Length: 614
Ligand code: ADP
Ligand code: ZN
Image (cartoon, rainbow, N blue to C red; front, side, top):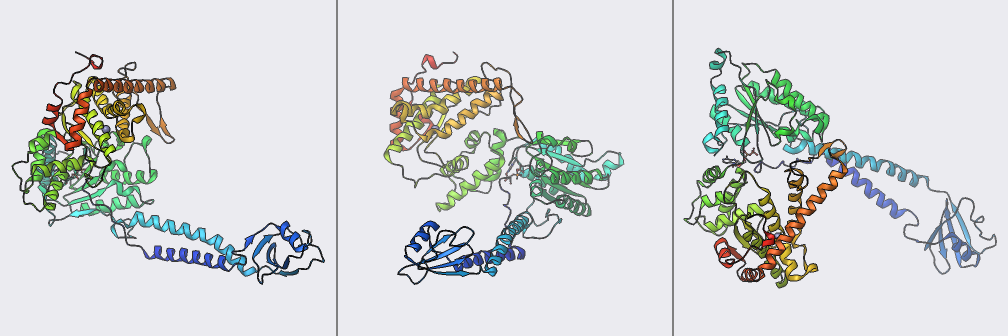
């Protein structure tokens, strides 16, 4: 989903423009009126003061309109002050009858008041209508079709579009095999009919974003040579009553007319979450989903339409969706393994000229956890790097910096750090690197740099040696300790209160990890083998455990964090001379690779108190 087009902003509709015009007109009107309202910029003084000055002969004229009074003081020829009297006459307020002041009582201007109240009533209404129009446009206008209620926005990928075939989808062999079967159903429906076999109606592809679900669905269509209609569940979320359902109807009728064909519903979880976890647009989602189900229930063996839906939240789906005759075929698409990552990288680097310094195998090794979309992104960024440097072939360096950019964000070479910050950064990263290097269950250091990147002042990379499916408590604890290594290095070098915000995101990640160890993985020492998952209902988060347990969880998390901090600190204090040494080289070279880190850290020792096992 990473490469999907962003919805475009629709054209400003005529109605919106009209509304905007009226809102602006009203605002201008209001401004003009306040400008001409008498007493607009006069100094406000208390009535008592005015009265006593008038009695003392220091005021020449009082212009009274209702309870508003404009005051012309002696020596001025027009009002410079204003005040407000209580109900009753000015004489009731204490003005002496014989005071030497001219009193003019004017009728309040009815017209002005009427205009003012009309505006105060209608302006909010106009604003509300304008806002409503705006929202409507947002919901409707994404494809520049401001008012096409109920028409399906399904896109038909025709023959002109570059075809995706199974061979373009690397890895996921099992999923492809299952889908080959669907292709066969679409190509030779007779074969199945004759044997009385039921042709599947719905296939659910579940897997993380960017793992190629859309690609696979498109590949099914092109392998079978049938039209492909696609629509995304998230498009329905912002719709008005009834629109989602009518779009679904429209989409299915188009697909049936073009049968055999494929309907692809991306992000179906957006409309099909379990009833108890339903968030967002409740009833509308339900109607949309029901319409999809009704349409599918109406299929028969001759319909020739197969619905492929994609989700990354299979656990959240409404079970009604998974009943026989609906999405009863389920295919899981996993994140690619190392070998598959290599295949995907090969696909995306295929037409790109590579220098001999590019090692795709190594890149595959260090991209554990990346999706196909991430890998495609790296290939593209690498090519951009090369083109920007006006070179013809892609080098290992182009690929490396593309990888790092995709993983953390672009380098900020231009951001000049002052010397103190650079030194702090060097110690901080050296802290991560040394703790990671020394603790036995942490991965080896791959690279350390103090070139600022994205939001960080530097980065230390660790290289997972192989794809790992499981992580032990030992490993988690070492990862926690190395995450705190940066902060602890700062503490050792600059003292308790010399530590900085540079460790903010380290601490956040570490705390989240410690919490999930306790609540999700059953790894708390006193809460071993229990999990504590929060639920959500209409009113918010629900904890299916007692307050005492919540307290225990907090204690366990705090204990893990304290232990990790202590271990990091001990390791660094014991190896202080290496901390200084590595920081110094970092200040000098900015970036140090795996091999050199190994050389610099040769001779470091693991203190007994930081050991977890032998
Ligand atoms: P999803 O629908 O699962 O979010 P997409 O099918 O939209 O993922 O994949 C996004 C992009 O990632 C694709 O256009 C393709 O470039 C790349 N990609 C993902 N998986 C693979 C794969 N297995 N082989 C090759 N490219 C892939
Ligand atoms: Zn850090």
